[in-house]
Amino acid sequence: MSNFSNSQWSDSNFAQEYRDQADGYVPERRRLIEVAQSLYKHFVRAGRPRRVLDLGCGDGLMVQELLKVDSDMDATLVDGSSEMLEAAGKRLGHFERKRLVNASFQDLLARDPLQTTFCFVLSSLAIHHLAMAEKAALFEYIHRHLDSGGFFLNMDVVLSPTDDLESWYLTLWREWIDAHAADSQKAYLLSVPQRYKNNADNVPDPLLPQLQALERVGFKNVDCYYKYGIFTMFGGSKSGELPHPTDH
Image (cartoon, rainbow, N blue to C red; front, side, top):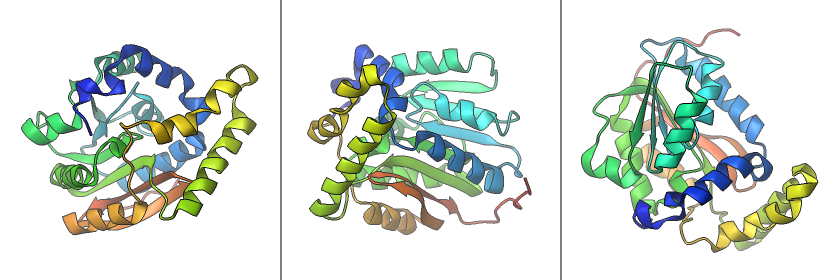
């Protein structure tokens, strides 16, 4: 990944466009959120204290959604975009136990401004901007910053293992947009898959090497928890006793 200040995400107009349009071009976004909430309730909510870290938090949507299932947590939100952090602060204005940290992934790896551990670390559509070596380094960083038994969950895009599958998955994405986007936005959003492919800031890797990288770091319960074409949710837990799952 290039330096964050040289990427599209440092541009306030681009960041605003992402916030405004994401529901229209992220397939199964609501289902991904529901799966994340379920995993959190099953493995995390029973433990205390509950410190949550959102890496590449964007406008704070994921923390807002987790608050619907657990209002008694502390949240640290990290993003390299000051505009995104400002939007997150506004979205979560009612929530007092939050910390906003303006830092890129490279900043985290270079100077570690967090200096604490968390029971749950999540990231959404952000880590694919890192090259594989940087992904592996970030996975190691996350593992160090997890409490024993803590969970890491990554919602992201991945590179398909074959060109044939990649072609079909991009077609599947366009079909989803065509079926779900508002008519006024459809023509513009249908170009998103190709713009994603042509954007040099995007350097996705296949799912399997990333799962293997998590295992090499020491993560347990490593798996793909949900997948829709190139969109996937995967992660793992840090060795140690997991909180006892609760019934819901």
